[in-house]
Length: 111
Length: 113
Image 1 (tube, rainbow over the protein chains, first blue to last red):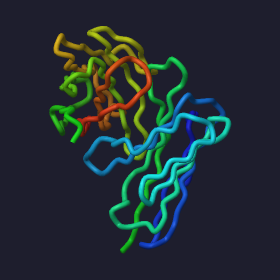
Image 2: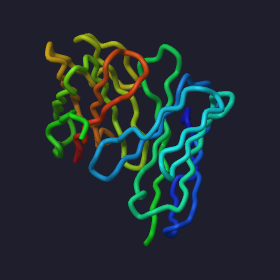
Image 3: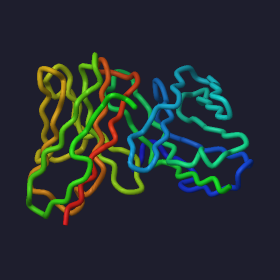
């Protein structure tokens, strides 16, 4: 069983549309991260959220950490073809040496 | 570009063979973690090396082993390859053992036939 569940697994939208990706768990995380991975490359960190209820914005991307620190969401406004990629949420547990990844959401933004 | 380099980028092996993958960490980083990413999945933690010692291990059998060298570069060795070992192997470097930002290399894609 996956400790971090992401939904949807795949999303195909038209340029200009908005979308939200969800990352859920029954476990508490000390922090959650979102990565983006493009074909043939390793994941690249987009953001880290640490405090329950925290909201961070990165241009058209808005990240939220749930109050109980068990879930997170990524919202993209006015998606562009350059946003296409695999979005991964990942969590750190207290005093843990391993980053736990979700299964990813593959986003395709059509021109 | 993260400054983490992995080699080789692609390789093909047959069942039962052994493979060694290499990773050079980013300058100033003393920790290397290895992850396996199967097709269509998120990365799964294999193990972490901190100051040349294995610091933690995921749910992988002993035929997955590693090393970290004094310059903090690292190797991942897999013996007795199985078809299910086909995956992208990612190396990530960081400073310190716990939490924080991981800097990933581009990965080594292993195909086992």
